[in-house]
Amino acid sequence: MAPNNTGRSGATIKDDRDSEDEYQLPHCFVKFQKSKEFVGCTSMSEAFLKLDLARAVTDVNRFNYICKVIQILVQEKLHNLSGSARRILLSLIEATVMHCIPIFGIFLPLGLDGCKELTTARLLVSDFMHGLTKGHHYGSPTMISSHQESLSALYKMITNQAMAPADSNEDTVTILDLPKECLHAILRQLPDHNSLLASAKALEALDVFSIYEGKLWEGLCRLHFSQQQMEGIFDKLGYDKRLVVNGVKVPGVVADWRHVYFESKKFFGLKELYADMIHICCHCKALFWKKLGHPCVSKTVAPAVRVTPQQFIDMMLYI
Image (spheres, rainbow, N blue to C red):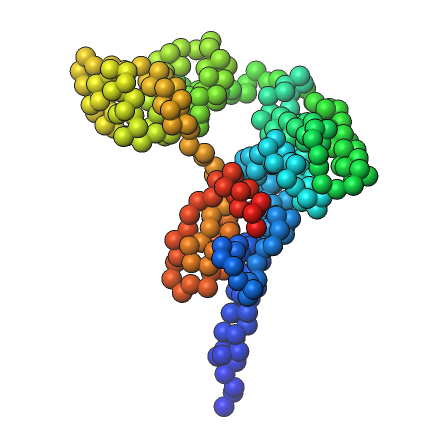
């Protein structure tokens, strides 16, 4: 009888491959209690490496989250970083610049400086350069000088990037050629007032914004604020709270949703919206990217809590 080669050995090989794939998922364990028997991250530099932030910056879903982390570090926490942490931060900014230039720098129309990603990279480099000139920083003067030279080279690389003129074609369909209903659907996807106001300025030649303005501001209100928060603002402004209930239209009753939005923003702030975020597992205390997951030791799906960029940095500084 021929031996059966599809039994335990095959399953073992498959399990080993699955374990290897799980091990490669970017994640790190953080310590919340005093214990000598702990295997996990002991520094910000190690956490950045284990979460693979330098490679993650090339992912469109994680780009904004990582840029926000960098922004907080260079603007508020630079003096708290060790020399090695600052070196890791510099390599992360370099990865951001290298990602933005070949993708966005070459194909921008001549004179257009509105590419959000490239502009963000320029601001991060500029803020880092400015931050190194203020206050005291850990590390030798030689190290700090080396970091400044690297940042200066990155800044020149961004500012000297050649912009190619965009090819014009009368037969090309532009956003202005779309039906108003399509434009409305696109504008509804904008995440905040800055994007909405910039789009309104770009589309001022059309009346699409004036037609749907109330609905667009209402959509932003419902995106960033809870029903209870909006009811409080409606009371303050003297509006009918029945309009807060989603989908309810009261004849003859209107509200200035733009006013409601900015009043709510003043009192409650805006939600931080990211396509992908770092989460922390409530079972094994691992930090991981939500869309990628992590190799949890729990046999069941354990709950996880979202970690904002500010919370992530606070955790890293107190590891």
